[in-house]
Image (cartoon, rainbow, N blue to C red; front, side):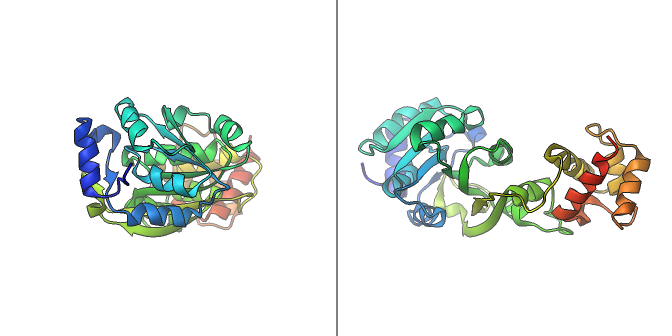
Length: 288
């Protein structure tokens, strides 16, 4: 099968199967060969790797992954794409296609079955409507993954690497930076896709940490505090936490914890670093 990463071959396979792009699934297929080549390079994929691809589409990136990796497991939610993948990936004996939802796929079982239990690498042109839930699910479930190299909407990538005091800084920034070392690898313009999206894209490389940069007694409480702090950005940190339905601390307890850290009672959540959120969650945990 010829490589799909060009407009001609993509159009031919789409027309052959009378495939209709489904906007609700965020389907935009790559048509520039330099992009999958750079994704493989960024992910540092070798024959020792088992790669899980999320949303292979018609198999454009999959073909490049299969040539570089020892094994590829592609998880596709759209049943209409399965027969297309059977054709476009014919001849790639190291590829397994799973029809399913990545949010319901047991990647631990995938690692055991296809990689001897060793950590997987994730590679994906993620559907933009569900990027954050997928990333958060992969991070918080502690699945056996060493790195993720994913195409995302540029503004989501900017949120992943944002620091305190910036408009892009938020719960996603802190979660990604807690679990991984994120890097914006390279931009991808709309012209590299069919159909063209209305937004700019970027490829992110997230190297999963063996140990978080901050030690906390209660990780669940840490992220409950973070989510509450950014739930109402315009409010002070004390008011955001005291009014959060997911937390049970009084305003007095919250204010005391903030003052014990040497912070102003009017400080907002966007001003705190990850380390400060770790300290705050530890102090609040004392009131339980």
